[in-house]
Image (cartoon, rainbow, N blue to C red; front, side, top):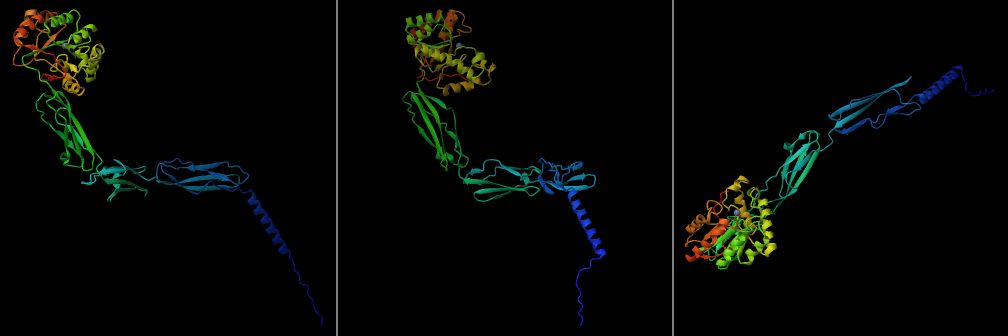
Length: 469
Ligand code: ZN
């Protein structure tokens, strides 16, 4: 048998070769295209979320090829002031290719509203009362004032405030509340803070007004501590103390001054406005000769020697004011005290006496001060007491500064005004020649008619007239 052997082999037909060639060409063409076609894409993500009202700057596009990014048209209408979804578009074109790229930009409200509490984050309230809400406001960057949307939850020791804006952003604020009285009671004195009572006289208690934020019966805790001894001239205090149920305390003090009453059948000669050289010295001569002591309310006028002489010859000295100018001293409380201080220091520096005796120019009842400051006398009479001064008006006006222009008029007016039944505080001026000239005969009349003389001192009860301003 003849064995036919067939050599197996591939027969490559002409058709196959053709196909292979075409494939190769296509392959190389695609590869070539791959090399030359530019790859353009967005920088960053295709979808971006930004907060409303923030600044938005698109990151743009980039190209992965040797080509340059030219002829790019960008359309960017993103408006971050308004919520919404915007498109940022890019069109890239070169000689062969055109690309269109698009990014979505979402403008959203990413900010939570803000709750602002009125009062503190920790508030105390009366244990015997309900906590009273102090209030709050809620504000949102997009929705505006949304206070009325706040939900308030209360439990024993805290209050929770919750708010949600229209974009569902949430905020929560907590206020701690503590049932404890932290506030001191308040106290106000009824009546004056300085009260003068005569030696052996009675003190009438005006009491105090007390208020507490929690306790309605705070008065029950009132304790009064007093060291008054009305049998001795001196300065005393009454202290009023209260304590609320939360152990908060308050106290207030009243000054009580026990003073000697002015004596009846007694003449208190008082000389204002000096010293005046040529007048005050003559008046001092007369007083010395008659062995009578008087009281001088001095100003910044005259020689220092006269101030010294008043004191060294045993007279009492007080302050009238430095300038005696109504327009200055009565235009303000500060002005008054500044002016007063000048003379207080003058007296102290010259004599070593720190006097607290004063007399208001024009007296406490003057109306002229109204021209410069309405109501100032009502304030000053209290303020001088607070500062430790005692003021002395008069109950007999000699008239030497007004109608009593001559010796006889002055003399007659004074002696006709004297009384054995009451004290006689006589207003005179050691600036007036007529006073200097009639003093001797006035003293003679008084002495021979059984009057005695005395001086005003800090131990004597102040004498005030009825206020008119
Ligand atoms: Zn005067």
